[in-house]
Length: 436
Image (cartoon, rainbow, N blue to C red; front, side, top):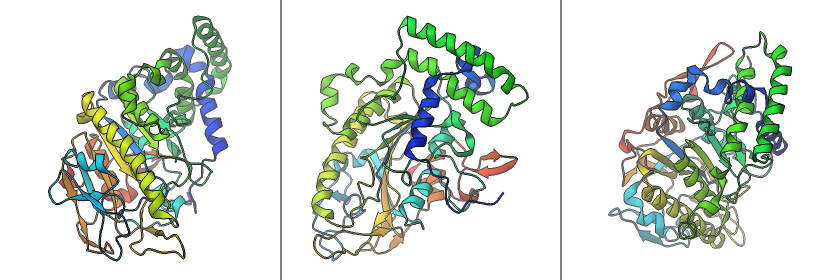
């Protein structure tokens, strides 16, 4: 099969259609409630699910200089100052006081390196682990892979997406060749639950089950002789609806104590981080949180004034998330990842209000919880941040690390039309042992 020149993009309309498909209900609900996704072959995996992920994605390419690797006082450093963290000798941007306070609980990688400086391609690479021209089919988001390998128990959704980029090119990668059963359940953001969710009173549930039984009867003829992954995944997506109806308060932030909610701040990100903590506490294993719509961190112009507001918002919400997970007893089994698709140039550019362009050679991210060694800084850049001095970490290395922390062998191969598809690009990469 010829590799596509670019990934098959998921347009905003496609998100709506996929969400509507997930929420309208189907025959699998009447044929066992949760369909084939939670058939006997997956029951053992679901029962063993104990680890979680909250991925906070910083679309646009956050600047390493204005986050985890400041170069204050150097020609490349920009106008921001820095602040001492709780790890001796390690400093973060001045507008990250909460993450600086929590640095001894998390790890930072300052030596990330990749090769795709276009937003669309960078998004695809940083969320699937594959270059768009190196796969035989559209690759799944890595959290869809996690949902496939370690599905949720008790009828809960395995993967939830909170907010998303605006526009087709920046849409969150979908389940790819894994099929609709591993599509993230989409929520529009600002702490809201799924759109188009039917009512859940006794009468509504009875009506839903009646329609589901009818759909099941009509679908029997089509399903006969079509035991394909595609048919199975659609069964699973349809079959999960009844469980959502019975767990509507899963997304109800009014159930959260007001004092807890206040710590996250009044922003959309704050609400979504609070909802992510709630979902994980209730048993949803994998959650992706979008920080603002579009390319919020894409600061080519007017970077430094606007960056301080953006970073403060981020620091408040994510700092509260980490504190809350620790308070809820969830930190040791929840992997929290803070990252974008690449970094920003050492050179400060622009006539008038300046900023930085895209940069893939040396950039930073942070992770913590779920077995991550706390207080670790992996790799370093030179004094101007123009090159990595030691311990480069590639995208395959990063994904091998994520999977290792979750108890998934990164050398595992999925299958598409009889062909093996490795979890990381061409099976490359090795876990970053310094953070394990």
